[in-house]
Amino acid sequence: MSLFSRAAAKLHWWMIAASIVILTGHLALSTRWFVQPISVTVTAEEMVLVRKTPLGAHAGATMIDVVAITGRECNMQAEVLFQRAQNDLVVYPTPEALVPCIAEPGPGVMTIQWRVVLGSWLPLRAITTQHVTE
Image (cartoon, rainbow, N blue to C red; front, side, top):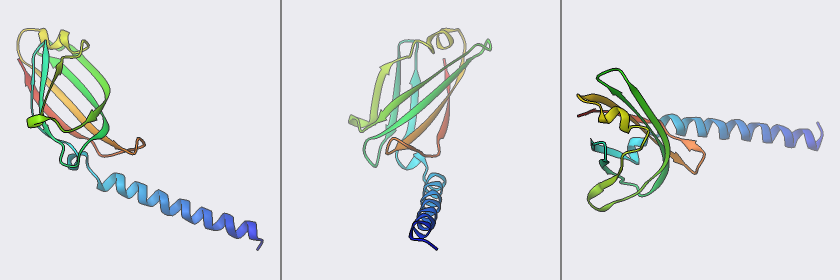
């Protein structure tokens, strides 16, 4: 067996081991360890989120779907930075893509999927929360 063949075989096993570690980490780690949503209040003007970030700031993604009582659906996706905030309270304008469904009369259902991405390349298992909009 040549030196090149032995080096290639070692590299092959290292790649398999690294893949197993990455897959295990993805399955074992949940976003809930990094972001803990407590409550969400939504109006056509603003969204008020109360959430804890016990392990500090982390990049991530969020996906929000709103279904109005009339059946109209609105959704959005965005990259976000989950970071500590005073009193764990974050207020920001309601995304334009969601306003038509939230502004409709009657209650609606809002589903939010929160996902932390470690190292900009390892997405953790998402957590999903549901809320009633009025």
